[in-house]
Image (cartoon, rainbow, N blue to C red; front, side, top):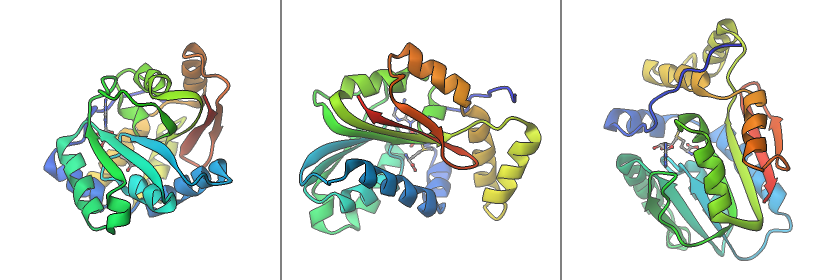
Length: 222
Ligand SMILES: C[S@@+](CC[C@H](N)C(=O)[O-])C[C@H]1O[C@@H](n2cnc3c(N)ncnc32)[C@H](O)[C@@H]1O
């Protein structure tokens, strides 16, 4: 098994924000939102949802568009990243824009008193120096029955597998993104490590599955 190499927690330099926001994550973002909508069937008219580590807001905005009537909170620690999410949100119709609140907070400090019906997070976990931050935030911001959907990368078994994934999925991307992807794969957790984290957080009833050659998803109700 490849050794885990953590990466810097925030990706908030103007260059990183621009490169990340300019990357095309549409396929995996859309698939994430599709699975969420499936899990929510029949779709409630109203609800509250928080996106932890929302980045430039691709998934947040797509979720807000798919869930009319819902109040959405988008949380991120990076001021530049959140500003980019604000710009992207500004291009949306008022009916979408006005239901989304951007919230700057560095987890585990969330500064929120509210609990949410749905908690989502994509690609935050592997950035956290201590993964328990995510699990304790789910418990703090959810209530019994809240739906959780967390997606992240899985650390490959070998250097060869890692290089193959970078070639397959970022072969045509700018070098800064290839490097980011490679670092993120190294910083990600294995299924075994994730299973142990869920168990020690008392969240072992959530389902944990590999959903692509590089992604895992944790989902279920608190
Ligand atoms: C790889 S990006 C993922 C962005 C977005 N979820 C997406 O799917 O495109 C990870 C985000 O997590 C944020 N982040 C990292 N550590 C954080 C923390 N402790 N609290 C809040 N946000 C954090 C970073 O600023 C960054 O925007």
